[in-house]
Image (tube, rainbow, N blue to C red; front, top):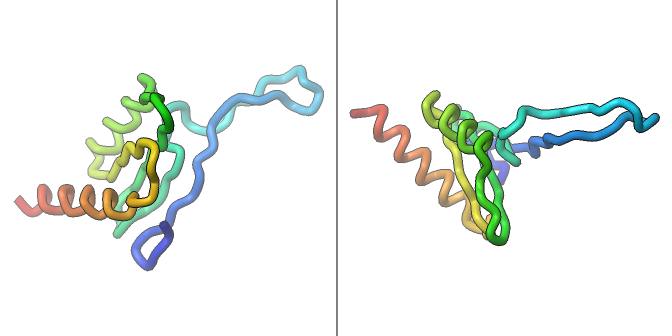
Length: 100
């Protein structure tokens, strides 16, 4: 979904062990979107869910934070084919609100 107005990248989070297997390493911000980026100057977060998966509490809180700061958050279920349309719709809704 990278275009003239959009840049996105994967946002990996999780837990692992070091090479010795003794030390636990956590990485990424808990609850943050699977994909993050910038769209027309606004922060963009895209959470991808498949099957019957739903957002957990941390993901819901991340969504609220992004939206309260004026960013775009998309919860994409099962089909990413039309994500560009969803992002543009969300952008228009946000910028329209700002003009009121």
